[in-house]
Image (cartoon, rainbow, N blue to C red; front, side, top):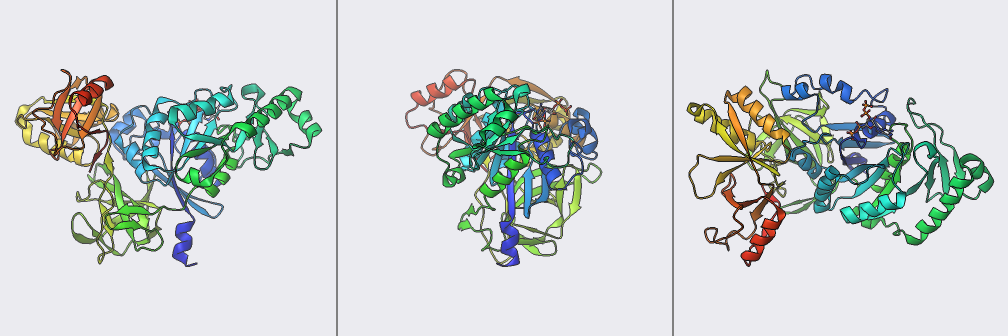
Length: 531
Ligand code: G4P
């Protein structure tokens, strides 16, 4: 096997998704700990250190002590080179979170065992399903009282519409948490709290047949319950089928406690075995194989003003095939230019490390003098193809933008357009009226503050935002067949157009969407736009 093939095949690139507080950060820290990337858990980006970790990033991050942007963590473990795409862990996440998932090959879903499936998980999960990427579930906080295990699995199946296959099974929870039963090895791993340790402690494993020993360890009651549950489980649960996992139709489920460092390394090991090497990606010329093809990448995120002093923009790209070398020339397909990528770097939290080389599966950030757009393709100078665009995700909050000082129209239009180009917000105009009114749509309301702040800070323009009641947006898929003037909906429906002139409809509730579809035969609406 060539060195290139080896390097690519040992890469695993995944995103961690969860509702805030389910334990994503804690789990990530434990992963990094095993990889030796950090010395002591808690030092990467704990909430307490978040304020310092963002040093020269947007002021707003510092002010609020949160991470507005997603970052990438790379570390080595057991011969694997792992890229974790982190997604913001607060309520007001943005479209970036969704786009980050476009750069991942699989996702780890962290669920709080006492809460079950929560709102944020549901949203992110939808995107994973759309992309059909494998999803691995880690049910966390078993050291606290958790919901009934069968109920938790049922909830995942019903709420998220994916089959579950528990790879291990918890024995009790909270104060009565005794450990997990490994279904493949048919043994019990006894709970130990090694929060302060650098690795999981020497886990005590007791085979199920050693009944007396097991009974001594976990007690008669837990033992009876376990045997009963195993019997139920073996009879009822889906057969494990890796192909179904890889199609995103079955999620392997693991239990543990990230905080006390139990079940995490077991999860990581199984996960790395089951998850995929960098996947081929669809381009307009067909599938691009990561190993067979030369260097190519696509831009999935643009971050402006990471360093205010330099007014720089960083374009994040996912390498989809081949090897990248800092000195090589590449083609920016959409811009039609051959160039060298400037200051290629690996971005870890707010630290940046200049890179000499990177491989398919890796994420790099490059200095962007304002030429890249989300979804752009880079490839070798002699080649030419474009990766499928990244969908535009449906904003859920809308506001009318009013300029406080109308004399500054030019700066305002420039500023708002640039920010929209980066994909931080989406802007719309009234359908069939002049340019004047601008409606802004965002996935998370924090983006409204980001917009206000940035217009003021970078373009010296003050705005007022008037919230609008719309929550649902639909693109018209068959726009060429539909006469928009004649389209009738409910009285609270609004017709607008996006930056490219595509017609869209805004609705206050889902019922209105349904009514409009009923009233206009042949109308096809979609939740995702295309770049
Ligand atoms: P997030 O990134 O998904 O938002 O969650 P994070 O890891 O920050 O965890 C949220 C809270 O839950 C933290 O407590 C964390 O210590 C706790 N936690 C994470 N995993 C476990 C677990 O397995 N068991 C228990 N009992 N708690 C867990 P916090 O008090 O909110 O924050 P902090 O002060 O500890 O940073």
